[in-house]
Image (cartoon, rainbow, N blue to C red):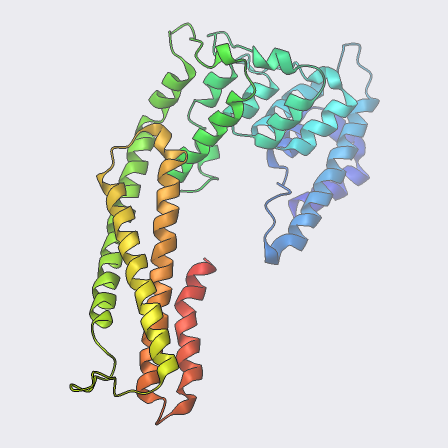
Length: 359
């Protein structure tokens, strides 16, 4: 709605947008992210993206018409810095193709475009600026007034506005910050990975200090989840083990053959119950190992997420197999009296697994 109104205004009063940098700054601050489309709102988002691009082009055209004696127009400085904070790569691209001289712009703290992109986790802007022109070697050695290189900046905790837009899970936030640090590490010279700033702090030291509280929250979240999943896995293990040593419907005490004669359903029950039993035991062992572990920051990058994924995968497998075994028992009991029971049993058994998968 606002973008549509802005488009109407700049179409009818284009010169209004060139009176100051405020219009372009506002566009950079609220430019829609083209990658955040969801199924039911993609048409609306694409329209907003198209309108925003048109407004951006009209505003930049009007700014270019103004005469200025400097190397680049000052109206581009503040907007391009804000765009780098907001991950608005479209705005950065539009400004730089018109005025490449805007790339050395800095804010009041002396941070340039690529430094702000790193601090605010603006991945698209960082990659675009890093590949733009012939400045790669400059970025590899770039330092601020405190001798912090770009890896030091990547180790700082993201601003609150950025963290609020990301996942609320502290463990996943920590993993994302570790992944970001590893990404930036590829862009610096090896000697800069352990280089100290004026406070004698290496990039890893800054990361550990800045993420100390986040790590505690992530550890607490992981242990709570592991405890809950362990209880569920133990319950499934108990049920499936009991079912494994009990023949559905009973058996002949002389011949030790089951009274229920549907062999296919009995085989299905035996296989699915066995799968559920061993999957739940695996789940229990994985989550117990998570609870018993001593955590380090680097564990949140690969080790812990892998363990959590394995544990949740086997928990899903055990629950699904248990539902199949339960359905097979119901069919064994009712197949002779009510043959059509198979359809509703199968349908109800699929619902829990389908619900979890679609989350």
